[in-house]
Length: 146
Length: 157
Image (tube, rainbow over the protein chains, first blue to last red):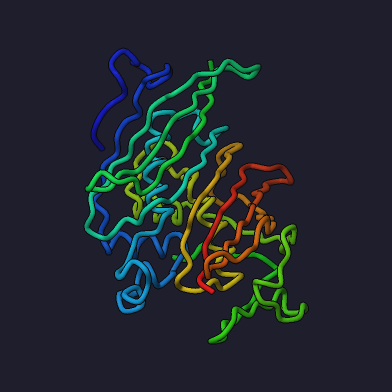
């Protein structure tokens, strides 16, 4: 993991413009196999090079949900109390992550809303490939509990 | 390591070379994915996630965040478990890809907690030679919703 919450947000990001902690991962084929077993998703497009060669991608790709797992890790790190208890997320899988690529998560609070239940942060979130393209892009909301 | 499956509404399925054949709960006639209309509710599926399975998932993702530590169930594992069951039940083909995902978490779930997944087909159409299927799953524990998800998958025709 690299990066850190924005300076001044001692207890984590909570204000508009605060960045979420960046997570960097080197995605390996071994990891993709481990994920397939753990998530029970053995789609051959992730595991079988011969099969994957015949798809639009020409080779194996990581599970989209693996990349989303990185984003969830970022959100849980930024919001240890709120993410799993009231968090929401909406993303598009825009391009695949290939084995061997190093990806990083990005996130920033774009809006804080006062509600009857307390403050809610709206965040832009994403997972970025080495060439700068977005593998995953979307938004999340997390209760700040204040 | 497979996630424990205690469902009593097992969906069995076969794929022919020409079409996706799905048999639901053995008693229903064989159906292809194209036969399901939006609004179709699949049989409930119950399962639980053990601490060991949660650790295997966290290790695979490399997730050491608070939500994945100390034996907790990483929240996205619940969603992945539900999605894999949909893919498994429908035996979606190997070229199936995941296009978008929505998630709503109510509360964390605990290892060994009985979860009921209730999946509804929200969309089912063909565009540009591929089938676009939208499935919504509610995750219930003790009759109360603990999470929900909406997944759009694209299946080559």
